[in-house]
Length: 151
Image (cartoon, rainbow, N blue to C red):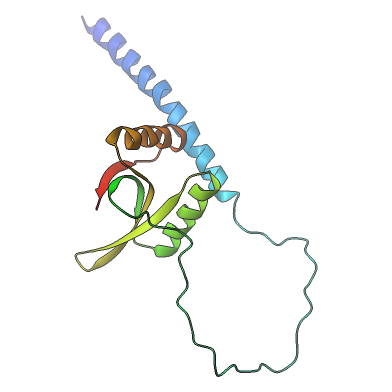
């Protein structure tokens, strides 16, 4: 009887190892993709430097920067791929998912005095459409995505 328990345990360990190895490879690929997108300026020529004194524009009114994302209007289902405390990281994720062909946006919310920036993709009328996108994102990028209803 002890032999069968040992064999069953060995089989379970092998299944877990091989089953998780694909997810580890996908996660490693995503990390390599994200690391490879850092801006480098190696080998570029120097830009000419303007040595003239700066001129102040007293009529200019400072504007708040406009977000590079569009929050969908109306209500429906959306897929959330991340919740970040750091707005710059959320904006980075929006840029990455935009490059991948999605239409992401950031929805901010304050929870217990802490500001969170939720990276979301899409606005769908049906739950089925949102589930299809969630399945695609989980399969392609191994993200812990979930579906939310927005109003």
